[in-house]
Length: 238
Image (cartoon, rainbow, N blue to C red; front, top):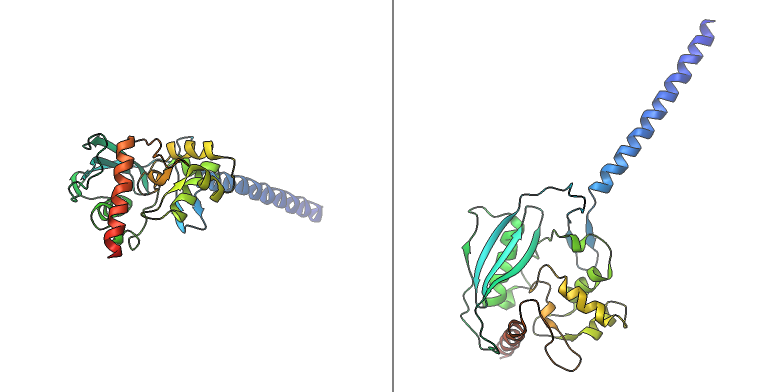
């Protein structure tokens, strides 16, 4: 009788242990799914993204730069840069001349997060000492466009990796580089979805005809950026 009772208790303990293990595995799986992040293996840049369900919370802050093309706002958190936005464009229509080469912080918190510091330093170098951008660390990004393994994300990474300072590529050529030669129109959509212009250089994507094409900051801003890079590249060649 005692032996039978002991075996019964032993079986109940095994069942309880198995149930606890299954519950643990289920909870762990949910936790890992909600903590997911993506990294592009070719770029070597870790990208942590905001989840669409809003469960990832971050303390957002902004930094404003006075740049040669006007005021540029960088928004982000401790995880990464959210967006780069052109807030005030000081360029006149068809202006391609080099403006003031200063790029300074005019608004922002006293203590910036590391991604915002890196982004600020990178943009300052782009305008003032462009040869330094290759030596500076790329800031982490924290934006939903990088969340899924989509064609848009693939195009943006391909552009960042392959089209360097002073170069230009057509929408069709970029589609080819991204692995889909028939997706030139989708490449245009990817450029419109780019949350971090200049760093991911959508201004370097032009029409096959050689025309500048559209740009979120305006065609004249795109022309200025291309002219700035051409001029700086020529200076470095001497």
